[in-house]
Length: 107
Image 1 (tube, rainbow, N blue to C red):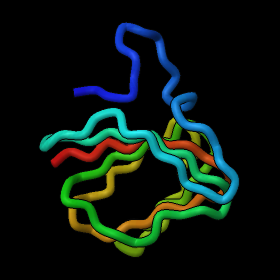
Image 2 (cartoon, one colour):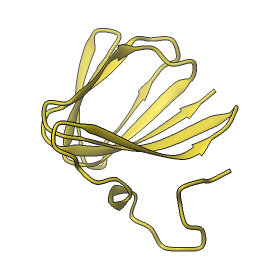
Image 3 (cartoon, rainbow, N blue to C red):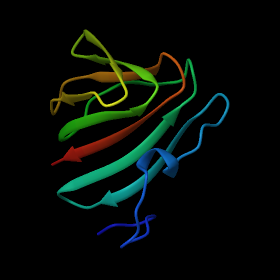
Image 4 (tube, one colour):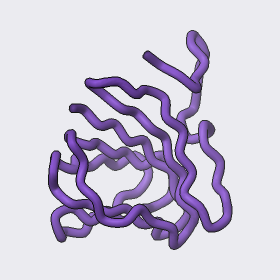
C-alpha cells in the first residue's frame, strides 16, 4: 500500500520533498482505488491550475503558506492548517511563499 517511504521509521513528512527553484515537486506515498496520499513542495509563485478531483481532497500545510481557491473562494493556509476540498468542485493551489503540503484524496 505505501511506496516511496520507509516503514517502522520515524519520519518528518516535510523532509520527504525538497524545494526546487521554479517548480512544484511531488512524492506519492499511497495510490490505490480508495485513497491517494502525496507530499508536495511549491516554490514561491508556483501553482497547480484550476482542476477538479474525483474524490474529497484534504490538504494540510506542513511548512510555509499557500493559497487555495476552492469553488471561487480563497483560503490562505499556514503550517498546521487543514482544508477539505470537496469532490468535483474546481480548485487551484498557489505558493504565496515556498511551502509544503500533504494531500490526501479519498475516493
